[in-house]
Amino acid sequence: MRTLDWIVLGLTLLSIVLYGIYKGRGSRNIKGFLLADRRMPWYAVALSIMATQASAITFTSTPGQAYVDGMRFVQFYFGLPVAMVILSITAVPIFHRLGVYTAYEYLEHRFDLKTRTLTSIIFLIQRGLSAGMTIYAPSIVLSVMLEWDVRITSTIIGGAIIIYTTSGGVKAVNWTDSQQMVIIMSGMALAFAMTIYLLPSGVGFREALHVAGGMGRLNLIDWSFNLKNRYNFWSGLIGGLFVALAYFGTDQSQVQRYLTGRSVAQSRLGLLFNGMAKIPMQFFILLLGAMVFVFYQFERPPLFFNPIEVRKIQQSPYSDSYRTLEQQYDEAFQAKSHQLQNYLAATRSHDPERIKDAKEKLDASKRKTDGIRGALIQLLTANDPTTDTSDTNYIFLSFVMRYLPAGLVGLIFACIFAASMSSSSGELSALATCSVVDIYKRHVVKMGSERHYLIVSRALMALWGLYGIAFAQYASHLGSLVEAVNILGSLFYGTLLGIFLLAFYFKSVGGSATFWAAFAGEAVVLYCFRFTEISWLWYNVVGCGVVISVALILNTLLFGSALGARTSVSLK
Amino acid sequence: MSSNHESQNSKLETRNLNLKTQNPKLESDAPPPFFRSWRNLYVMVLGELVLVIVLFYLFMKAFR
Image (cartoon, rainbow over all chains, first blue to last red):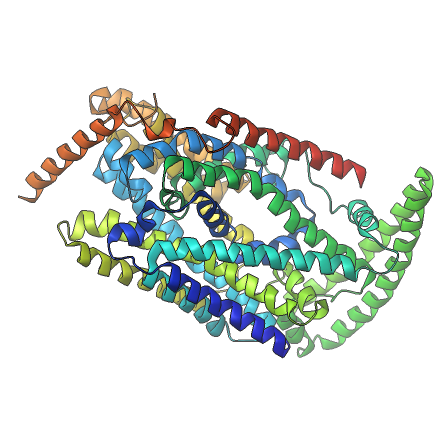
């Protein structure tokens, strides 16, 4: 990084913290601190929802995922707009009408205290784990790329969040989320424009799309139905719908975002805007990855993108084998470049036979380069069996550092820090809110003063932040960070969603049946995770289905309808 | 004493809740600032989803 990059990075981070402190001033009671006084306009709600969902992992890993696997990941979001509509119709009016601080508070109104406490504890465990991951994942990537200690990167991210969340609460979180989203999208748009600009002369955007498509990177839709396949149309639409319903309807880190809307209409508009903007945004980030892939078809890429792992193998007894592989890769890359030029010439000729022939030769040369990369991965594992053999998270940042101009590199790194801060701050504020409202206020100090709860809320926000930093500093290496976070969430989301759907739609089912059904649902999800090959996207469907079925059976056989709904606040 | 207080609190909450839900003019009935009705807005969101899927498919076919 050059001086201009450090200036841009430093100023951007400083502006986020100062903006958070400025916008969060005046939070003098618990409603102001935890719900932003319910005064947020729809666009701030929408941007905050999007920023909380889009973590730093989204912006480091997703382009890398398109580079390695193509754009099929976009299908994961097909259920999201449907979920936004369902939640706008069901959850938003109920939560607003009751004036709840947390989604789980509603469950006490609808069922009983034990169900509220159970769901809140499930959330605290699940989100607590991933809050640590949300800081850890970008910290480790940034530490590798900037050659900083992971303790420094995680402390910068966590420390900045603690400053503005403890001073301004949720108001600061929502406004900085909006600011961060604008910074992130501006940075990514500039990176996209520069990637196209850096393509060799004679290769325009259209040719680049032909290269990406010809080499399997524009695989946006897969109509096949396969429970073991994570990314196809049906997994995305059905599995993705359940993931989105659970995440946006039962996860306090998202519910809190739209609870701050100044009316039902403003909260709904926030959710619906997310429903419309999310898929195009993911498409754009994946397309950026596909364009980086095209760029590296003309420019020799590193044999492996994680510089730390490369350094380790260079200093190991396998260094000679590594050098041999590098030489082989040079030759294979030259051959592939030649075949690529032939393929482009064939596409210009519009001759199907010639295109087919050129494509087959290009595929063969690509298999050769992939084979050499595979041999390197075997070498890395032989040298250190615990090594992280996935370099997906480093592809985009490696490209940024090598080829983007001064200033823009700093801005992209600022985007990654900002994305990490936006999702972590949403999580920390939600964790603090549940800890205070659902646990502390309900079970520990029930009749405290407003000032007392405000002090406890600030203290818990700081504590959750410190926990996130500590987790990031001691977490061990994980494989693909995107999937790790998503899998973690999926193990609990099905159960939570089942409980909320029972609350909304099954008036006769009571708290005890729901409470015990939740354990059954979680047991089945854990069984699927441990002993089956069902893709994690379907865990939510399974967990939710089991909770509802078991609750209905228990309610009929053991608890009876007399213990059903406590109030009329459910959907008819 | 604590359980007595809790029970009273719970009754109060339930009463408030019923009062709120019995309010004939619900805030959620207010139309959106644009597209006249919520139904229209929901149709637009779902329509955009269908359009995006169709466009993705055509895009993929065009550059395969």
